Length: 237
Image (cartoon, rainbow, N blue to C red):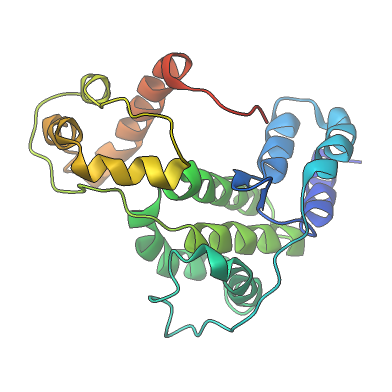
C-alpha cells in the first residue's frame, strides 16, 4: 500500500469518530497519521490508529441545519458541532474545494485560536493533502476540519492593529502567563482583562506586505516552538 493509500484509508477509518473526546481534547488522529507518513513511518500508522481509536468517541449527530446564508449566529457554538460538520460535509462535494476554502478562510481566521488552534491545524493538514491528490476521503477530511473550526470558533481578546517594533520572539516573551484553571476558552477569556496582554500585542512589529507573510509565519513557528517546553503541559497525543 502506498503512503497516499495509507492516508486515505486512515481518513476513512477516523471519519466515523468525532473531533473531540474526553471532554474537549482534540482528536489528533488524522493529523498524527499524516505526520507519521511524512516522517517515513507509514507502516506504523495502522497499529497506532488501532490503539488511539479506542479512546475516541462517535461523531456528533446534526440537529438543526445551518443555512449557507445564516451562518453567523451559530459560528463559535460548540453545541452545533454536528450541524457544522453536516454543512461542510455537503459543501466540499458541491464546489471546488479551493473556492470553498477561499470563501470560508476570511470568516474563520479571526477565530483561529479555536480549540488551541486545532481547527486551523487540521485544516492545514487537509489542504496540504488535497494539493497533492484530490480524493473523496481528503475532501471529507477538509469538511470535518472546517466544521470543527467553525463550531469552536473563538476570537482572540484584544485583537487590534499593531504598530510596534518588536520581533515576534520579543513580543512572545511579554505575553503574561495565566493560571491553568479551567479550559482553554476560559483562560483565553482572561486575556481581555490582562493589561500585559494588550501591551505585548502593541509591541509587535506589523507585517505590511503580503510577500512577507511566509517568513513572518516561519518566525512565529520558530519562536513558539523554542518556548513550548517552558510553557506547555497537558495530555500527550
